Image (cartoon, rainbow, N blue to C red; front, side):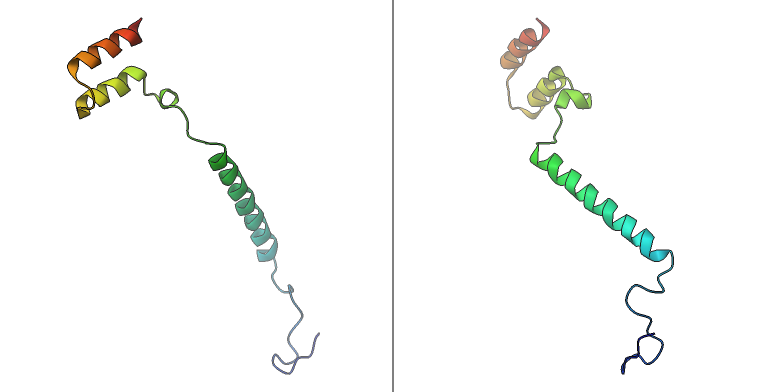
Length: 85
């Protein structure tokens, strides 16, 4: 035991008395560190997937652009033909 004027005779030193909480806390710490590294690498590598990989086809995108008024009916028909060939 370490005698300390502030804590009295009951201070056992740093890290003692944590029981199973200490190792669990260390595991949680390393999981968070690894998850943070994976997230940073994914962001830096441009982790966004292509729209078609998310179930959205080029024709779906074209329809949405037409619905929003970004392209007119003639442009929609021309691009639709291009996609179908």
